[in-house]
Length: 486
Ligand code: GLN
Image (tube, rainbow, N blue to C red):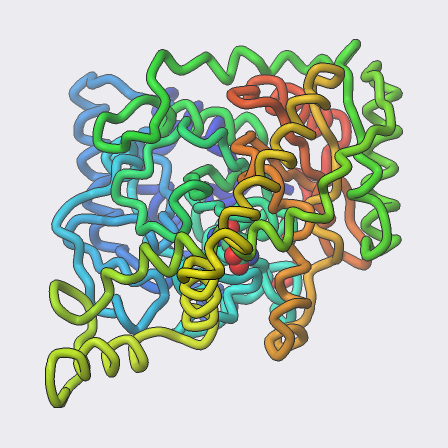
């Protein structure tokens, strides 16, 4: 039964606040008490900002008492992935190199959520490189459904916080699947918006042509509300799209009759756990029974998404991460011999193994003599992948696939095998390469573990995928089930 404050959705809490049945402080206390109870097991947070959260909640209550305006997210406690800059609160990217970095400014999304009590900053794979949070330099987050398993990654802390009741919602970032795969593993809703819908000002860059910020929530309605709050133009991010933001909530009609859904066969081919395929198949049947027109289709360049991603993302990362040299901010090696030695020691000591691997892969792919063969070739194939989607969206409103080919896996299971780890993003890599929106939501449970379904739409097609996801969610009802491992 959903009855405790920390278990409720944004919409439920908002109604309670509007009716003055609870205060923002009471809600925030409930969430903070939950953090105290389960954080020892879940380890979702790098930094908990309890005092700041309560202070914001008090301000909100005072404003409400004075008859002030109240937005849909006002007073609802939440969390930011620790790669989003928060003024005065350390922002580590779960890396030694930024362990003590305190930003002098807020990210655009942090500004936009100013009335929300921030519970803390959540754990991630170092610089968002990974699929399990095991690449965090600090500790691994646990899956709230079973603490022996990973929560997915790289936004594993955000997903686990929402699933365990340690935040009502959270923001994550997604470059190749880092919102959707952990959402799937933790049984919550995760949306990677269209490239350019949400400002990345103040998001620590990983791969700038792919990175997007998006919500992790318990319900699709909540997802639409958070997206509404964070979307929109920002002149400080030149890749941010101009123009008005549509009304996402108005798209949630509960109807999918006549909606054309394509199921690309490449995503249900070998490598997908039959139990995952089974749950996705049942969701397809339900959507068809609800009146959607479901059809098998093909995205022929799908198999190139992994190699293309692992050239482009590391290439951009090697360039973005060049700024961590010990000169301006972050960690600096203690006793360097000279300035070059300082760069070398700082970076050797400050970065973890996966980040170093990416920097080396990217530097290699961009170096003279290999640039054309690897990086430029990858850009061309990226266009072919994008064209697959352009073609598909002339026939279909939405494309449906599993989010992850497997169920959440055991901690340690894939840490020695980077390629096996990379393969857990096989279904999520193409959407960022094509710049399109994609959402994950729970479509069933196997052995007590959630299975995620992915819905992809055309650029700026968030309304359509939210509508489909919402209608499905209301019918299927999986969102009601609470994580059972904590
Ligand atoms: N797991 C993928 C990677 O390791 C994607 C990460 C992400 O989306 N930030 O690069």
